[in-house]
Amino acid sequence: MTDRGNFTHCSFQAIRSLPEITPERKKALTAFQKAARIRFKSLKLLNLSFVHRSVVNESGHKSNNERLEFLGDAILGAVTATLLYEKLTEKKEGELAKIKSVVVSEDVLAGIARELQIDTLLILGRGEELSGGRAKKAILADAMEALIGALYLDSGYNVVFNFLHPRLEPEIAKVIDKRHTQDYKSLLQELTQRLYRTYPIYQLVKRSGPEHARFFWTEVTVNDQSYGPGMGKTKKSAEREAAKMAYESLSGINGKGDL
Image: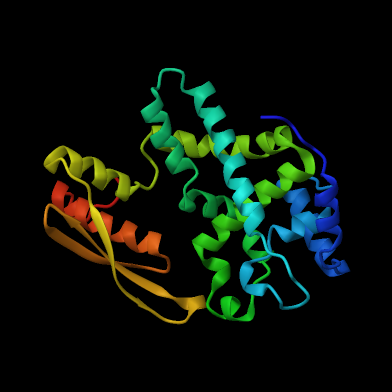
């Protein structure tokens, strides 16, 4: 992957069009950079990584962090794959892929975001703020990916690699030592294939609440037997809960949790 470290003309134009940063906000962003040991050339770009889509058209914001999130997801994947390739020379491709899926998971990214206190810097719409958006794992994980994307655009791949390396290595160690939270959807799929030579089928059975505070209920069917429903604030989290119920039932774990 090439090391960029500078903006295209289009990028400069887009950044210049963003709202000006108040002195108070600039102070908070400067403190964040010092604590995170990074330095942005463009504070506007850094600030944009914390702007949730719920705030668009409020307070002068016409852009949000979704495009940066898309970019950051790809850069995060590349950094993680590089670390695994270099560190785990004895592992095969399938094993590396499983470890990578945990390291870049929502739970891990949200945890890193909390350590960096990104929750205090999020810019949320009124409804999302009132519904506890600062504590939502999905929003924190997305902001973490957006930060990675912003740092890549601002300073290049090598800077991102050095920023992520010390934060991802402990997570890789947890997976290797089996001290991480299990990915129950993957575990259930493997178990189902081994027992029945088929795949789990997930079905959304209910949703409730307004868009900014929605809940989902999902069931999973394995070999004509339904499990759940699992409940969550996102479809993915509801599916994970249903998968955990099915996996524990089928494998005889009986609710002991992490393996």
